[in-house]
Image (cartoon, rainbow, N blue to C red; front, side, top):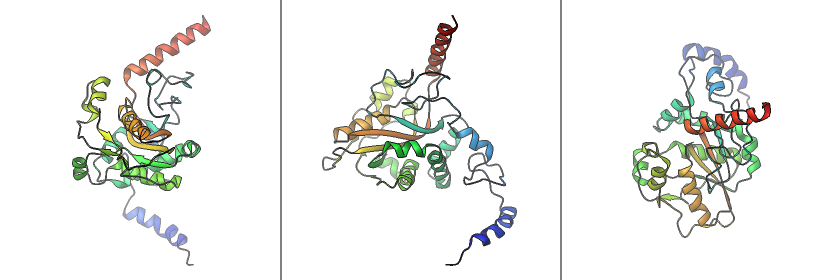
Length: 268
């Protein structure tokens, strides 16, 4: 077998000079992107590893808080899914990258975000031990507008990493709904997705442990509705993985108040 690695090592500097590589997130020129096509600054910013996170919903929380039973954003909610893993918080520059990826015209960016997610969360995702990966589905009209939604690319890539099957047709969105981000509150979000998803009657999920994939999780309404349908169809457990976790300002404020109260109790 002819080894071509040395050819790449010799020609890469010339290619970088003629066609400078740019960070897929911020667009700045990069000389050494490592194993990801992102600059060191964006690599550090998009990672959630430096943020204290809830053990259940993956939302950012105040330091030293015990989140084994959830945080202020999820502890009072009875979600149909077990846990959430994410790359980082829905803040810049990750937010901008996700919005660009949503156009469906930048698969390289979606692939890079998924690679970053896997690099950070692979141990947790492997330890979960899922049987099947399912992306959150889109309505058929939206699929015409965006034939290859980024969430499907994310699911396929994670399926390759975990070496488990990905099922794109076991879950359907049969009612087209306004986008969740246009809803003013949690109640509207829940009503918006009521009876929007179904699992075909012929589908068999008896005892399956499913990894549900989406791009962003905010209130958890979408993933909760989908997880409920999967469990009705026989799934034993559903865990969620997303690129970003969006936590409301009110929840962050509540966690700060909880932390301050705890510190006062300790020092008082």
